[in-house]
Structure formats: C-alpha cells, structure tokens
Length: 305
Ligand code: KG4
Ligand code: ZN
Image 1: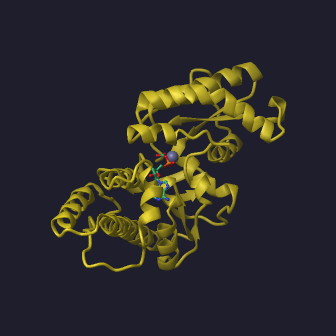
Image 2: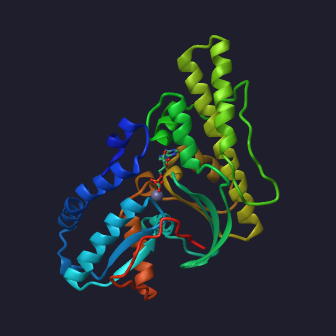
Image 3: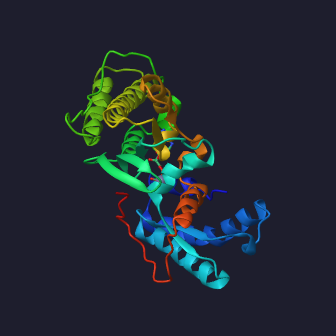
C-alpha cells in the first residue's frame, strides 16, 4: 500500500518540501486504514508501531512521527523508531533475506548514497558516501536537463539503451583510495554533451537516448566498481542493494555480472520508498528491545553508523 506523490511532484519538476508534508498529512490516515483492511488486521493484531524518525525532510518526518505517537498512545502499542536507510536495507528481508554476514550494503536513494559494512543485525560500519549529489538526485537532475520529467531514474532507464557503446563517454569520478562517490561533475559533462549534440545538429531524440545511456553507464560503472572492490576488501559474503536507485535494472544486471559474491536486491517496488521496509526494520529493532516514548522527535540528518 503506497500513497504516491509522484504526480504532484512531477508538476513542480521535483519535491517541494511543503507540498510533500501536506500530502503526507492528507494520505496518512486513509493509507493506514487501507493497509489494515487489505491485511484483514485489527489494531489488537499488532505487536508494535514502527515509524521513520530520520533522515529526511523535517515536515514529512513530523507528520509520520506525530501520527505514530498518537496511535501508540491511543492503542497502548509500543513505539519503535526506525532509520529510513536501515529500512532500505531491511526491504531485502521481506523477500530474500541474506543468510550470512558480513554484507557490503550499497544504499542509493534520492537523498543519500553510501557504502556500509554490515557485520550483524543493526551493526553498521561506515565505508563511504557521496561528496555532493546522491545517485538518485543525479538521475533526477539529468532527466530534468533532458526534458524527461520527474522522477528521473525510471525515465532515464526507459530511454537508455544499455550495452551500446557510443563514440563519446562521460567522465567517471573514481576518487581513488577511498569509498566515496561524486556525481556533480557528471551534470556539467552532460550539459556539454547536450550542447555538442546541438552544434552537430544531431536528431534530438537520438541525442536524448545517447546522453541518457552514457549517463546511466557512467553512474552504474562507478557504483559497481566501488561496491565490488569494498566487498572484496572486507570479505563480504554478499552485496546488498537498497534505495530507489537499486530499482535500476541496468545497475542490478551489471552488479550481478561483476560481483564474485551473491547480489541481494529486492523487487523494484520494494526498493523505492514504502512502509513495508520500515516494518521489516522495525521488527528487528523491536526484537532487540528498541522502544521510544512519546518524546520521540525527528532527526532530519540521522546517521546509520
Ligand atoms: O529511496 P527513494 O524512493 O526515496 C528517497 O529516499 O530518496 O529513492 C528515490 C530516487 C529518485 O531519485 C529516483 O529517480 C530514483 O530513486 N529511482 C531510480 C529508479 N527508480 C527510482 N533511479 C534509477 N533507476 C530507476 N529505475
Ligand atoms: Zn528512501
């Protein structure tokens, strides 16, 4: 049960925080009721209420946390705080749970891009993150530049033709010697590629396809190379992918080709934001005894490790 705001945000070309929190407020109670009825569940069938308390947009987080606190107070159910990025990791426990640790987790969403070593449930070591744009943010910005609309990731995936080598390649920021990423330089390079195409009088549709393909190739190349390298260095038993960009079919394919260990990734609809993944992470937090009281607050910059 996902209440999507994509159509509304598409009109603005991206997420406007005030619009997002207002939509949260409108959808929250109806979607909770729908989910309960779809599951044929009543409040007294539940063991706990899990809620995202960060990271994210403060206004949207506030709507969720205050709804969860109110429901916990009214029902007497325990309140379990969940980190949004940990939710992306635990989306994988809904379908295809990893059987062994350690895992190297690549988390790629609209707001975050990071690599973590996961040694056990809830045990994360930070390896690296983006120094500028998140991977999803780069997809969204390049899609806007190409006139492909919002959200950019699925739009770019639709027009890109992977595995087709072209004459021009976009640069990759390798930042050697660490596990960090950088995607902001790509935007400038894409802009230049678009300008060159215009000067050369190329067919606009073919041009959009070429740029989208080369952009997707560049992002996937860097994400894959760095993740596979980190997995080897840390003796990971598997690579785990999470976050909206993990829905990208080309990323999934190339990661599986290049990784010597299994690649664990959920169905695309469980990679993009959903409440089931928060419930999955909440389940493990609940078992570990994590509880919040009614003073629970939002943490827009909450860290995983
Ligand atoms: O995790 P998510 O749903 O929301 C955040 O927590 O940010 O990620 C959303 C991001 C957007 O930037 C969107 O363009 C990207 O994930 N995304 C994709 C695909 N589907 C969603 N990027 C590449 N390929 C996709 N198929
Ligand atoms: Zn997310």
